[in-house]
Amino acid sequence: MRTIKRTEPEKNLSFVPLSRILFVIFIILIIYFLFYYNYFQIKKIVVINSKITHDYEIEENVFSTLSTNRFYIFPGKNIFLINKQQIATNLKNRFSNINDVSVSRIYPDVLKIKIQEKLPKIIWQTEKSLTYFVDANGEIFLEVSGISGNGNETNLPKIKDLSDKSVVLFENVLFPKHINFILKLNERLPQEGIKISFFEIPAKLAGEIHLVTDEGWKIYFNIEKDAEAQISNLRLALTDEIKERKINLDYIDLRIENWVYYKMRTGPQILQQSLNVEKEKKATE
Image (cartoon, rainbow, N blue to C red; front, side):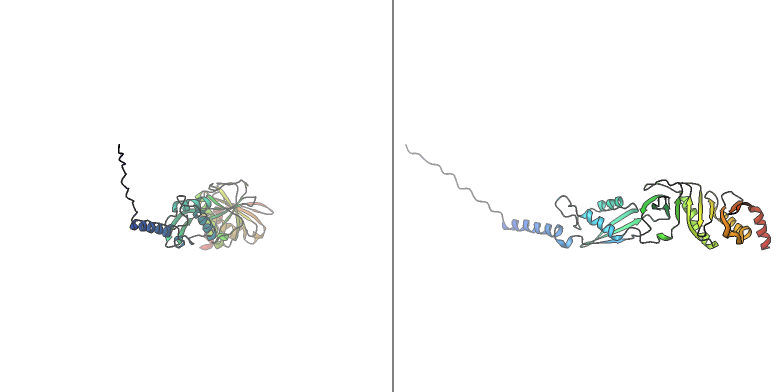
């Protein structure tokens, strides 16, 4: 019996078209050029509006953030893939004085960081000589060792806390009215010929403030009362009752309305403000 052997037809070999291979290579090159090529990697960071924080500190923080890969495979420094939200969040977490951050790209390799800082209005100092910046709302926002920075922080009023209580960041140690009152005194009293050394406060959020002059005598103010009226009473006491005796002055107390209480180093005296107002009026007639 004759056996017939069946043969399988030969399979056709399939070839990938050259155009498809070239297309894939082109896509790979595009991905490499856009995301890996050094041309689009962040090389410079421009910091705008930094007054307290040093530019190099911000740059170091941003480059540290960019050192982490994006999506595990792409370099974090790539200008197309930078995580602007993460950069802003890290800066605000690292620097307590930064209130807001805006991040923008400048192609091909520059990152612009525009920051909005809390500005110090007062310098707060404890008896342990720890020093902090306080903003317009009376909030502690930055601990400083000595006074440094890019602004005029050395000209700010200094408040010494006599209670020697510790403070933490973002704690309110003064009310906004305290800040406004102290800034008013800091502006007006030099116009009256009084040189301010520093201020003292009995405790956080107290209703009074003590001023220490560079001559060593003090002035006690009531924050709940009008600052300008108390300055007027102070002027009366210094020009009418005390005059040349100021060298022996211990303090002047303006906290009680319509009264000026002052103490010489030899003993206390009381001056009724209304009598001096009449004297001033007669002198000007």
